[in-house]
Image 1: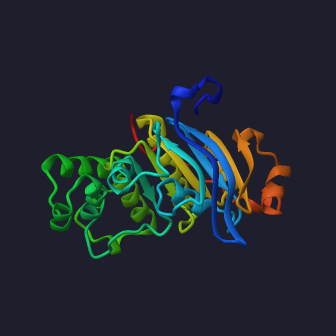
Image 2 (image 1 turned 90 degrees about the horizontal axis):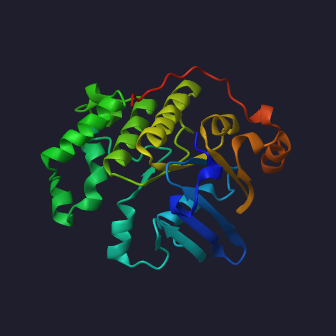
Image 3 (image 1 turned 120 degrees about the vertical axis):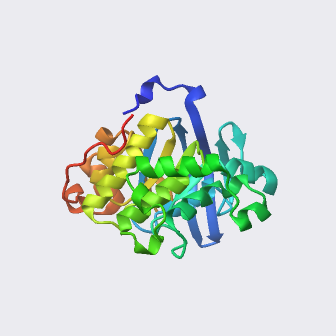
Length: 274
């Protein structure tokens, strides 16, 4: 785990302040949210459905336009960037989705290579033109995620856990500095959930890629995170270490006890070797 106290400003990859997203005068999804994310840090965002977790991630990569506030990524204020400069920034911010967001009629390797589209011209992307280096990189990542044998299998033939590993591979082949993970284990069983979280933890520790993960499972967040942020009704109600997240805070966030939020633990072995 990262030592938060040893980090300084030069370690900051993402700096958010005053982030607000209002859809209507009566519907505010985020209200004055602010925090920093350091390089090589895994931070989980918890909170009930409708708390603003998904909106937060989509504001960071500007899939959703913030109403106000500042988002500084890798030293660049991105809230006002125009299309070409935003495209360059997005190359370094990959995303993993709850429902995988794969093209199921395509093979695993074809889906993974879609992570390189941000580096391609429109024509090259449409024609699926990838060089040998990109293909080898994709295959190596699939090997690390232990699904190389499925490289040329259509993704509609894979299990949920395997599909999410394809999503992780697609995110990694992008060469990101930051991975945004929107409920990456919400559709998985407990064992598969811990396998996926083990991969994310190993990616952060081995490659130094920062990871911001939306989760509903408090016990999972406490086990795998360097830091936890809690949102409630679009506002930040907690930002601290897993050990500092008390039962009282969990009850405040969810209106239920930590025991009610727990799932059965399972043993997980380290999935990626250094």
